[in-house]
Each structure stands twice: as C-alpha cells, then as structure tokens.
Image (cartoon, rainbow, N blue to C red):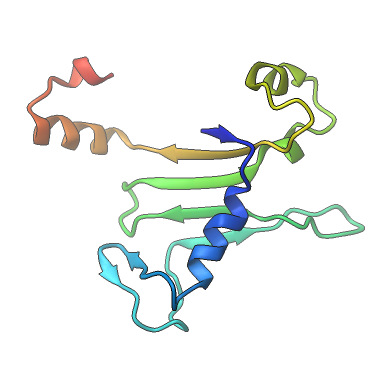
Length: 124
C-alpha cells in the first residue's frame, strides 16, 4: 500500500501512547509499558556523515512463518533512482510516499483457504 500519510509517525504514536491505546502483541495484551516489544524493530539507514531521520519499521508475528509488516519512506528509497514513474503513477507529485508491505507466507494462504472452504488455486 502506498500513501502520502506518514505511516511511520502514526504507528510510532500509537505504540508510544500506552495511556490512550491498548496494545495486543501476538494475541496478548501488553500491560507493562516498559515491556520489550518482541518482533518489532526500527532500522535506521545512514550515510557515513549522518543517520537518516526516519526508520524502517518491521513487525512480525511470533512464529517465523507468520505475517510480517514493513513500513518505510518510499520516497527516500526512490531518491536518485530512475523510477520517477512511481510518483507520477500514484499522483503524489512532490509529496512524500510511504509504503506498507505485508508478507504472507504460503502456509498462511493455505490456512485461509482451509478456514473459508476455498480452493487454493482460486485465491492464488
């Protein structure tokens, strides 16, 4: 999903606002605001001169084969590339593009098909 809304700031705000929002992590309520958030990471890239301001957020389920989410500043990735068509195609001319990518493993799709009585080939 591509958007011009800063998903990084939004997700970080919700995570940090433990008084305003409840958080469930792998199906369990996070009671302690100091508890380490397992399977959540913020990765900052950098040049030799400075650290980039916005991180890439990584969230995944506890089991290795589960869903995973990556949220990042797509515009920063596109800087200096020949991929101007992405910005034009999206119609975000001059605005920052943020991308959210969900990784769904084959086992998750098969489980969905089993749970909903769909044929695997219908979904793929």
